[in-house]
Length: 458
Image 1 (cartoon, rainbow, N blue to C red):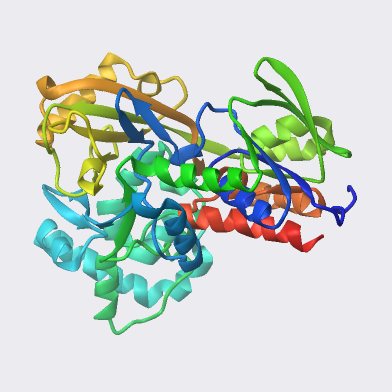
Image 2: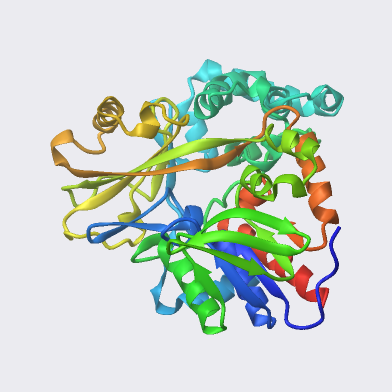
């Protein structure tokens, strides 16, 4: 275990320039620290980065700022200034043969489900409410948790196939913790609970969903505005961001890093390292500085790769709302950011952002013609656009799109976190570094918390 941070201005290295790393850097710089951020990609922002194709910016999926965290939001809003625009949430999900609002509303559920199925699902939900407390000890995986929370009929009708298809893992092989941290709650189910005489909740409860009515915050150039605004303020305070910087090793005693930048090997030495990169990357860089048993533990933590196509379409508008989830397609979400205020050129064109989970180097990851054809079939059958209207395809990829909460993951994660916590000059946080599912405002709060923790040690 290395020594504590000195009382002078601390020198801090941050690995990764996603919104978590950027906000940690900004908080530290505001506190007088000397901060360097290393980013291996040519652009800042992580999963919230803006990719530019021709004259247009494209998001890696749907990334809009919520106002749930008042302090974080007010800070970001001030930094974004007049570039920030407000847009009312208008999300949808394909439910049966209809397009319903998301989160799913009670009357949508009534109209979308066949009467007998609806009866079964409501009955199953009421039974789950009655027996929830008794079933809590029998929850061993995500399937058990979903059934305990929603009832077997609704699980079989709505969740089982979609979850299996999305993750390529059956719910029985996912941890029950996945439901609490990731699975959005259906507001329609909450309405049913309100009319139920049984008010008990059980340990399988899902995470809170988006609000029924909510104002989101975006910009004319998409999600790239937020990380750019954070980086600009960070730079004004003397912070340094190096893109296309590839780390080759980390040491904790002394606290230092070796990296490649502009075809030269360079080194950094200081007081503390904040990691926001995937945990297996961190432990590979640490090498022998981390116990061997931890390398075994981190190898058990897996990530789900994600691909996103940004498709320029010769049409003024293709969809209603900002994005729609699909349960029976080879893509799981399609967004049209122009409907949230993104400026698209030419002005009479639009951009579709088509998201899918995949496996490394499969046909989706490679963006093959076969997969494009599957997408085209889906777009045409959903009456979104025609093949002849597609002007260009642009592929974006992330090998670490989502942490995968397989059974037993928490044992390995707890082991890793316990060791990190005892290291005085190492912190690992954020979506990748903490192996969790934060929204942008939560990721920034995690970065802020890490930074404030360091500043308090001075």
